[in-house]
Image (cartoon, rainbow, N blue to C red; front, side):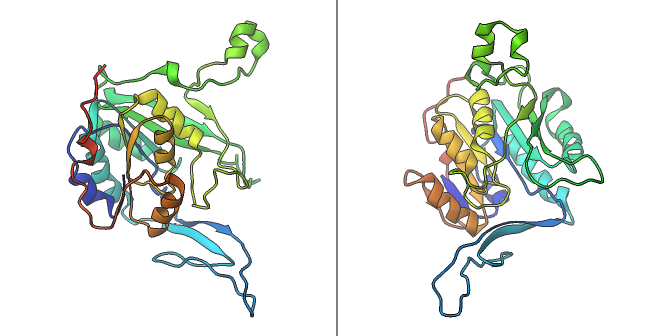
Length: 290
């Protein structure tokens, strides 16, 4: 299911302990406008170009999808949503909070208070090697994903379901191990979404499905519910569906909803702005606990 609207009232209307995995990739509060542009020619007598336009959107030489990534009260905005995330997690569930390096340390302090320090599982560094580089400092080419569990004695984690990586020094291990690959550590080397690849939707800050598949495969089982309430281009839903998980996505951006309609196909129910979510997260059979 995909719901269009402000995520906070939607979250407050959902039943507690409904989701096995919650992944959120909120605006990073970088203070700049995030945008991605695609340029395409449109038949016209005067040679002008056509694009989308909506609240906080603009058209520049084609379609520009973007948002203002600056909040004066960023943590006043995010804290109540993280409180709801804690409430909505099952006892075996896991939260993955994807943030920029500018905000990750503040989030760690807040989540320690909300979840408890003993519920902190990992700080994952997603490293990539693409884009412009400054010569005035070490170029920043990583994001931080903070991982917290609802109950440190009961959380679900299945490393056997996680994709494996090549050894950096395969000559130091047996040929059998080199062929099988190694389990990922808390540093993930994974490329961004290719600007020319099939996965690209044109949505700003789109994350690669490979990162979400790893998260969902490790921390949930087939049939479990996955929640993303800053859904953006719908990568969480695409990865969850491919792995046989059920998902609920929330976003108030009409352009995000349009992208998800085209990406997720006809098996997904779209609820219009202001719709009641009902008991979407509890309408299936009870999920077996480990």
